Amino acid sequence: MVALLSLRRKVLSWIAGAVALTALSACDISMPVGGDLLNRTGSVKVALLVPKSSANGSALATSLENAAWLAVADLDAVEIDLKVYDTAGTSQGATLAAQQAISDGARMIVGPLFAESASAAGAVAANRGVNVLAFSNNPAIAGGNVFILGNTFQNSADRLVRFASRQGKSAIYLVHADDPAERLGAAAVEQAIQANGGRLAGTSSFPLSQQGVINKVPEIARNYRASGASSLFVTSGTSGALPFLAELLPENGIDSSVAQFIGLQRLDIPSSALSLKGLQGALFALPSPGLNQQFNNRYQATYGTLPNPIAGLAYDGIAAIGALAAAGAPLNASGITQGQGFAGVGGPFRFFRNGTNERGLAVAQIQNNQVIVIDPAPRSFGGPGF
Image (cartoon, rainbow, N blue to C red; front, side, top):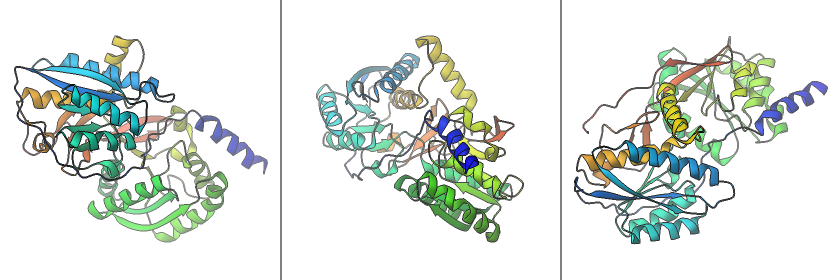
């Protein structure tokens, strides 16, 4: 009992400071898509929607806005007339902001942050043929005139399953919490296994609570050993059940000598997670660290502080619009979804007609409490485009 309480205190001491990049639930929307050919010689009016007056999002809003202005400054071939609108972090605020932006002549909307807000802004913008590049990573809101910029569970799952299969670790045992976000993550892993040469050896779920995961670990370990799997794929993040799994699974005989541990979410945020015994040798996907560091250095040199981890999405959104405008391409589905995609702060990315995206990710492994890239992010995508 003393050891268990000690474990709980150790895990909870740094969970409080974790940064969780989780999907937010929202409704699907299906709207017409517009956008005519651009005149390269004129400026393009773009609206940035951020939660400036939100109690919990004001600092992030500042980071997103700063990153967007960096992107504007980097565009030599075209002029972006950027105007920032406050959503207050609500769907109603997003509706009003989108209405004002379109009234002001915005040709494209970048943001907002939260899924429900993005749906609200998209509904307003669709009636005027304006497309939205939202910061969300939730595919449920993508479609019609709404394209999501955030890295999706599917991107990470596909990248990791492909890599594991190439390494002979294609028999995958899936572990997830029984909650909406992790069920979405589990579905993404199952789809990735089916599409990328893997085999689903088994699945275990657990109640999303301290006692729920603690009670379930012995059963997970037994089922894993009986399944014949070579990899253990976990959907939980560092702000959820992952620390308990990483500590308790090795105690139940499932360590790196038995299973290739794979995390669907980032395993390096917060950095204290890197010292967890059960994560040594674990794999996860992340944007190109080298490119990300270049962006962080540039941001810090300009603003005197490091950006929020998702601030680069604002840069990417503005840069994509700039690339289309410089080429005289339309800001419609045809232009936005051109095959080669765009250069982002963490690697290449491109949009699909269903509003989701593909991002070129690196595969990293935790070795001796450090993050080591063992398979770099691709530099570009194939296919026609700019």
